[in-house]
Amino acid sequence: MTKTTPDFSFEEAATRRGYARIVGVDEVGRGPLAGPVVAAAVWLDPSRIPSGLNDSKALTAKRREALYDEILAVADVSIASCSVEEIDEINILQASLRAMERAVAGLAVKADYVLVDGNKVPSAFGLDAEAIVKGDARSFSISAASIVAKIWRDRLMVDLAQQYPGYGWEKNAGYGTKIHMEGLQNLGVTPHHRRSFKPVHNILYQDKNISD
Image (cartoon, rainbow, N blue to C red; front, top):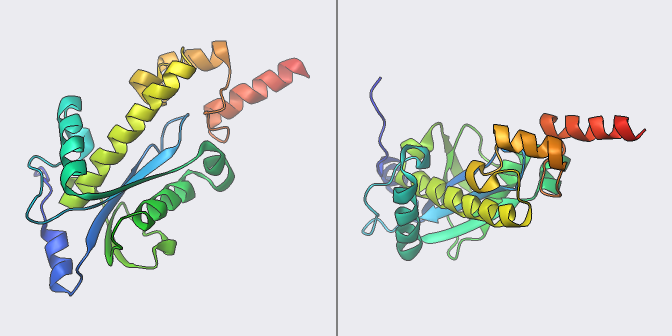
């Protein structure tokens, strides 16, 4: 299988169809047991595209950090999130879509076309859009959004780890690693845990049974 690297072809195709302000949007944090789901929307100036953009997962942490600063310096960027309370209320998929809607709505200049990572377009965009599977490895705008969302969320989880040590959030970003699971067992559930996610729900249920 040939390795995919992102380019500007989706953006150029939309421009040829008459769209002027084409943005990419991506979310990060669907899988963790703790913390919000975060989305970023990015409009790239075609003449100032940072070099080395790729799916955030394909980059080193150092490269992601450098690109994050570059993107913020040259692009129109909006970052939005959906809280753990919202995730528990409407489910993680709907919360991811809602975070993307908020990110697109928060751009300084309104978009007229959106490239969305994945296979679903949030209905509330109210804009023309297309979903691109593995878009973060195929479109520069989505790659940029994936990098921004990941760095912003990782930094948030490092901050939360200072307030709630013992879960390893500064390293696992809220994913269910061994240290995180041990923290849940030993320290219990924090306000930043997603109660609708099975491992967290099970611990709450276990605690309830013990106290009943």
